[in-house]
Image 1 (spheres, rainbow, N blue to C red):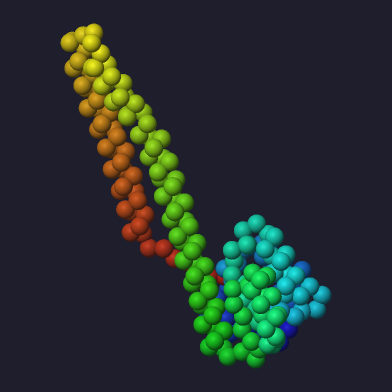
Image 2 (image 1 turned 90 degrees about the horizontal axis):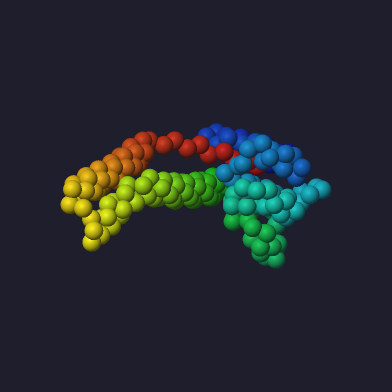
Length: 201
């Protein structure tokens, strides 16, 4: 309880949102309400220990990529290796230096937020590609139809201007779609983004 209070106070003063949990079940209930950006947990706890808790957390959809850092008094090499095998990204030994703990928390939260941002950008770009492909399908199909009609040996000369008009209008539509999407993407990248870092420990 004392460690939870000390760590929570330290991180809260630094600007993090901290939701303390004093047991494994309490931690599982907390993350069920909102996914954290980082999980701090002790290696040795009564009842459900840190390894069991981390395994349970990894079974929750959306939490398998959330970085977990162990706070531990253990110096046993096998225990530390077991922590990494369980999915921890780092550990801090107790008694800890506040500067060290904050540096590690900042680093792992920063990496997590960067990864989230890159995944979001990749997802948005894929959605944009799908949208552009869908909207370009009709005008390009019209261009293909008109050019095929113009290439027919029995294409009537009086129909040629109409097919040329179809090609011209469809090409303009396609360029308009592309210009609209490029402008929307440009506005999106220019808008400032704010991110909050929630911490559950």
